[in-house]
Image (cartoon, rainbow, N blue to C red; front, side, top):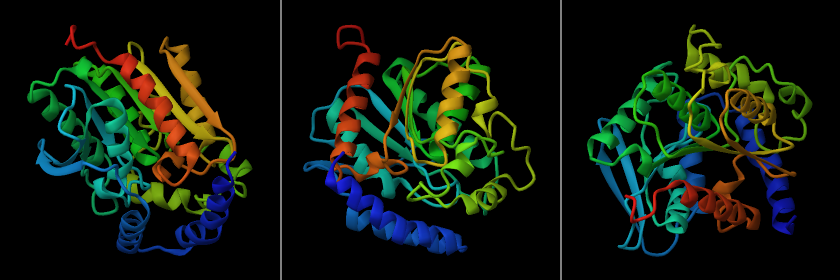
Length: 303
């Protein structure tokens, strides 16, 4: 592990974790994350960002002028309460550059102003809007992180249930898959997690659910049916409170016949790939994921 990883963990524990533990105002959480993203997260050179509309607002990220036909459809994290395409677009630009694809980040509705299933409705609209632009399912790889990771897995379950065209693959960083928080790691890793305060989990879930059933598979994909799903790639850290959210959904998917690639990294923070260009482990993970993505897309001759 790198020295930068140790420094980053120390800084997150003594700054961001404390801020997330005490800040109750969604607007302050949002503005704080936006400011941090502007300061810390930078895309590759020659990155172009463009606003678009797929039935919901989206932001496109592309590196250079030459890209293939594939699209990365990515849902940002932030506990269903904060985060935006702008907070995650630098990471997606990096991944787009590594894969030769375009990245598309929907601006889905957030809680508490918009409760479940508003975010899923927006995710479904974005996916259907992308298909309507004549991008076929086998040219789309979907991804997300944290709450956005849970959202993309819920969208996958929804796609399967509706027998809609499936994407070529799905990936998630540290996904939130169980809003009942029944995994042991919520308590066992409460101290070791350098970013997420376990004490805020139930509150964030209540803002999102607002009385809806936490075991609804479209809110908590741990309880969903994934029979017939495409390949899935999951990443999580062994010190995270959401570790069991990854481990248990990976096991459930395998029981249903899904091919799952599961990477559990040692002592890395929640959604560490967002620290690309700052953390060597983040760059290595994105490079690893890019290889996995390329293997799932049709060759130019097939597309």
